[in-house]
Length: 171
Ligand SMILES: [Fe+2]
Ligand SMILES: [Fe+2]
Image 1 (cartoon, rainbow, N blue to C red):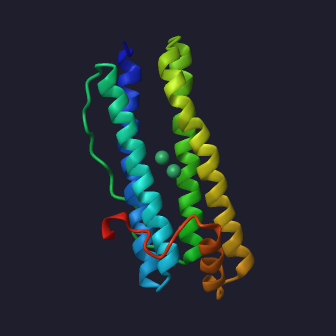
Image 2 (image 1 turned 135 degrees about the vertical axis):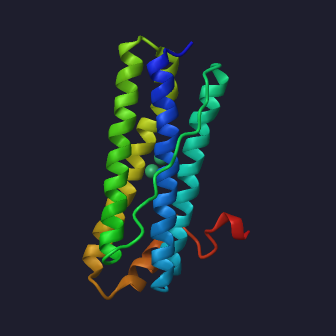
């Protein structure tokens, strides 16, 4: 059984992941307005993954019989100065989520809740990957310079991490 504060914190994390999902939708549509369809696709894909994280947390709450309350998701930032700014914002968001996950893990340990700690380990590992991949993208954009986004998109396509039809809803 989850302790009450852990149940509340995991419910809060559902909102945080949905916020991330919406933050990436905002970045995806920004990329699309610049005609950067591959970068847009990459962020649509990230957005779906974040929604997946929210669902994974929800299912955990249900599986341990905890109360699920879907909280209010704050609006994400909607305007960006540049491609670099939008990606820096995304990296900051990943760092924020890493801190949130670490705090959840800390709480699970504090309560000797090994089942929840074991469940949360997936998120700890996922954050290492997500932070690294966003950091790679930021470095790529910085190295390419302000007028070479098509090179960045080419490189992204070559990694196989994203395709032109990355919007799962479009398939
Ligand atoms: Fe996430
Ligand atoms: Fe993420």
